[in-house]
Amino acid sequence: MSGLDGVGIALRSLAFAERRAVGVKNGGLQTPSEVLRGAGNLSNAYNAIKDLDKTVGKGYLEPLKAIESSKIAKNIGTVSKWAAEISNPLTVASAALRVMDAPSDKKFETAIKEGSGVSGMFLAEHLIKTKSAETVIENAAIAVAKLIPNEGKLKYVKMALVPVAKAVAFVAASLAGSYLGKKAGTEIAGHA
Image (cartoon, rainbow, N blue to C red; front, side, top):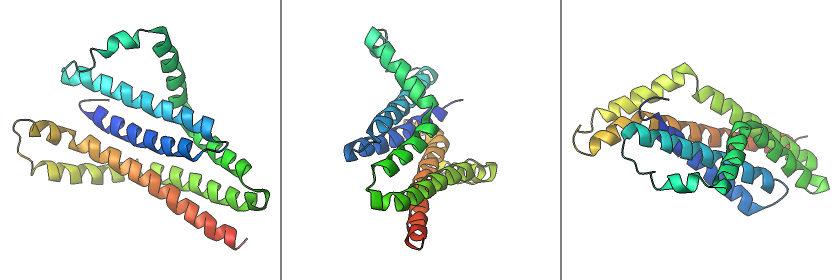
């Protein structure tokens, strides 16, 4: 990670943490998996912000050092780091748990819908991370950045534009892929 890439990582992680909160709110068998995935997302966001804080040199996170050194925070950090590392398997496990939680007459339909949603999400995430997609996103962000004056606090906005654009594109692709995959799965299940 270099420069202000941490802004993009933090935004992407916070967006996914919000999605995990919605999953927890909805309840069901997948709730423990959603909690772990959310903790992993928050851990990634915190680490990116911490690295960004060092890069920019503002020291905004200085007051958190006392909290960070507590035994409880260290244990939470360990679980969060582990959850961040196994995010994809937890995504698949959450889908499987939604299938298990479905009424018996809806399990087949739910399995097709969830499998299609996870497949669509992973496909969209892969495509948005390809070099050609990243180049398009970077070029668009750079074109917009050229329109922003390089003065005062606007220079930080200008510097963060590429990583923010990449983060927004990744989250949008992931959510759109999941949504479209589930829609396709619903159609397929309706004809099965």
